[in-house]
Image (cartoon, rainbow, N blue to C red):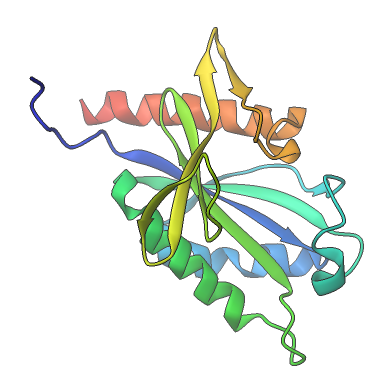
Length: 177
């Protein structure tokens, strides 16, 4: 029988989506208040994965990823997702539509985990209406998608960002001992 132990801390990141490039930068302050200092940014990429968000957020959507310096417990994922939703609310259009979509997740040595408000067969309920999903698995030296992995998590620039974040994460773990 195993003995329960707390897991190693995780490296958190947020996927940002907006048609307003200035807003992608403006929310960094809010996200840093939630997660700590930003330690890495991906390139800003045109969103071509779907048209799902265009009716609410407009055309010409852009995707950027940020990772954060502090390592935090994986158990914080639900609270962080709820905090990200509060940030989204602050930036809503006066008409009620979102101007930015914030999707937090974390990575560990062997996986990338995303938070969601939507249930699905592969998602595990956490608390407060928040679910978690392992969306990428790390083996053979790279991250691999699963049948349900969002297409933008398989884009080469996203995978480069996540691999660099993983390398930084492993360095941080070594420093912690």
